[in-house]
Image 1 (cartoon, helix red, strand yellow):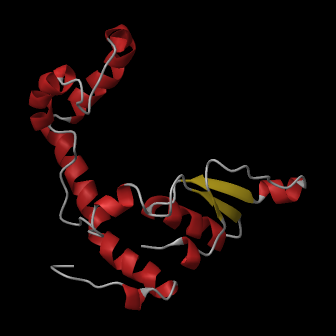
Image 2 (tube, one colour):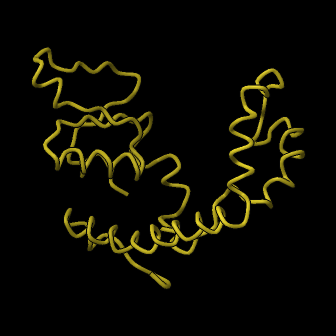
Length: 165
């Protein structure tokens, strides 16, 4: 976890106000990244390396949301898209569960249909296999890229690799 004390760019809580400079050159070179989890932090770091002035905005302390819930696991073995034929069977129970992860306002269904058709087409065997292959390529590079980022930022001693990684 990268905390504010080791964070190389300023962070601000969403409840506080942040002022971006009046200078047009400063403004063009200033970027705000919303979300201080692992993705937002990595994006902010890469933008900073490219010469941008970066402000990282996080509601809570850095890496306290979704990034804390994965126990630091980089799931390189996950090569199957979340959208799969198996998920279609779960949609009715998700829709009728008042606390479920899926809620669709029936009035929105006509606008949703083009997206839903694209989803169904993506679940056909050939496009689905293409997605799996693409995820395998991305995930195959993830651990080495993460280790490289840690080494660049001198965090390599603060992380421990366990398992097949």
